[in-house]
Amino acid sequence: MQASDFDYTLPAESVAQHPLPERDASRMLLLERHDEKYTDHSFAEISSLLRGDELIVVNNSKVIPARLFAYRVRTRAQPPGKQSIVGQVYLRTPIEILLLRRIEIDLWEALVRPGRKVRVGEQLKFAGAALEAEVVSRGALGLRHLRFHSPGDTWAAIESIGHIPLPPYIRRPDGPADRERYQTVYAANLGSVAAPTAGLHFTPGVIEQLKTRGIEVCEITLDVGLGTFQPIRTENLEDHRIYGETYHIPSQTADAIAAARRTHRPILAIGTTVVRALEDAARKAEACGRPLETIATGQATAELFIRPGHRFALVDQLLTNFHLPRSTLLVLVASFAGREFTLAAYRYAVAARYRFYSYGDCMLIR
Image (cartoon, rainbow, N blue to C red; front, top):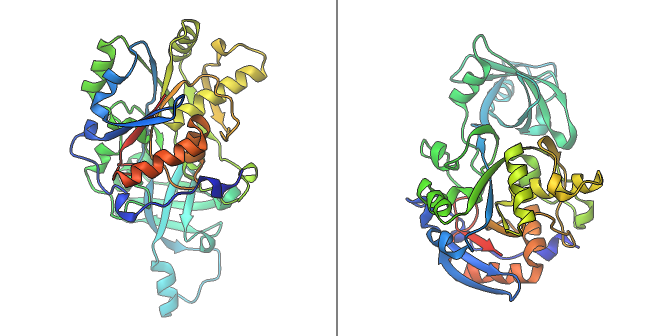
């Protein structure tokens, strides 16, 4: 299929720039796949809309302050002389860094902007902390490997000056409130550079309502990175290479999934990151000749690009936010609910003034 098959028109005013005052005040569009109907609801109603025996799987990954700003201090390249105006601009131009994943204690993979002008060997200094970094290598897709140096705790220095990496469609700087609101209430394991946004709607009260009804909630960890937000740059979907993301499935969660399948209870994935982790684990189990009830526990890397034609092995229901046109996330949702039905629901949501993207409203698909 073509990337253009997953396009739609969205007015700029539909993109949510701030979260609502209350997490569970979001609107929720309920999609019924079998009869292709959708109805309007509030997320606060979710407990009453479920059967009552679901297994809910959430992603407990926590967003790190991954956006940093640096300046060159010296370089192995041959810039203009430092006494010239051009040379001063060269050394004072801010370099934006988005940390993607930690490779070693002080070695990180990162996106750097402007990327072409930051070469291997560059030395970068960060304002507001005793922190420097050296560009030690260049990876695939134009990524850089940065080796950080600090006289104290390197991570503490990064955390003190780092910014919450709000997506570029949020046209404002991050603020102190985003450190709390761009996290789920159950976030626990540091590692993501974007929030698993379907989980942003949950409150402790909503979770308690679900459990009171007998609905089980369990956790996985997938560190959201480039594989989630990397745009599709090829017209043919088959040509798109998706970037791997690390996930971890605890033994308790694997046991809960096995029990749900044995008793024919629906598995509700909270967000596309959970879908990707569970379906990747299912595919690996099948490749090893194991039944789905024995998905592997522990750490693995998801490199699965879910496209139309994918046979969903573990996920029966999905809660998800609205996603960008021509994105891997929209392709995943359309694979689950059907392309034409999904795009029709998106057109309805635009006309009904739903709020889109990370701080926006959500869809429950079953």
